[in-house]
Length: 354
Image 1 (cartoon, rainbow, N blue to C red):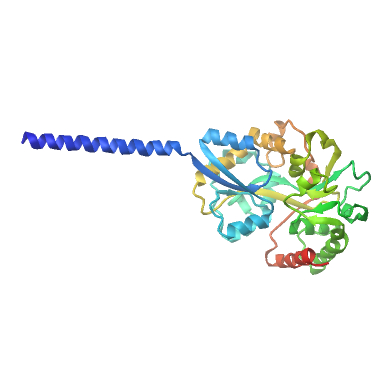
Image 2: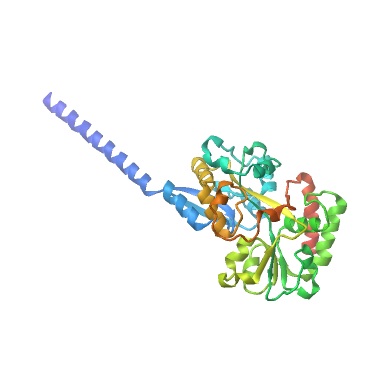
């Protein structure tokens, strides 16, 4: 009997030891592998310093991939690039992604800093996501025009600059349908969201017959590098890209402006994909971005006005490449639904036609 009791005690002790060992091993493995947050965002759009602070505070690893247009982003997601947690689409594509049931609802109870977002930006976001059920505004801005003042001495701060034959093959515009078509519509006094056959056709002809002949190419990926290298003297694009590539000691040589006619306005938002495996961490990142000191750091890094976060405005220290009031005449790009096909046809004619 004693022998049996002793054997049972040994087995119990061994079982307890193995259980503890397995438990400790599992714990150690978990501690060695920080959770990952997969982000799909525009190029030059979140400072490395902000990413590093988030990783340190939440003991995680951010995997950051970038895209150069909404169309590129959407195509990749639809082709199966669905391992991302957070994506940064513009307003019209937020609407498209909602309709395609690609997004997870946002739990606003976990966003203490949502209160910092400018009510005017939230009001505009209702056009594509009423009540911000699926998206949180990240930044409101517009593409503009960069001019190398050492090469171009006299010019009008207008989209008409692309009509200049004397600057032929020294200019570029974005390879972005809604941006370029929107510019042409705004220049002609029309809505950037017009679906009138006559308006779309007139915009197509302006781009194709008057602007395109003076362009070296349409470029949404390397326009900033080309401008910095002197390949282009005039470039339509985003200020953050232009100044990230340009020699900081020579930035006074560059005039960046939002044309006087206005143009397409964008609100880029943070959304969580429905298939995200780290939705709680994604919500933490969204809330982290809208801390006033973090948002100010983001805006200072890229020369932005703090358009979307009110308390961050008092904390900004750096220069701004344009002002919030420069956006007054710009109009938010909206989801055109089935009428987007009119733009697709016009853009195809621009890209391959003569």
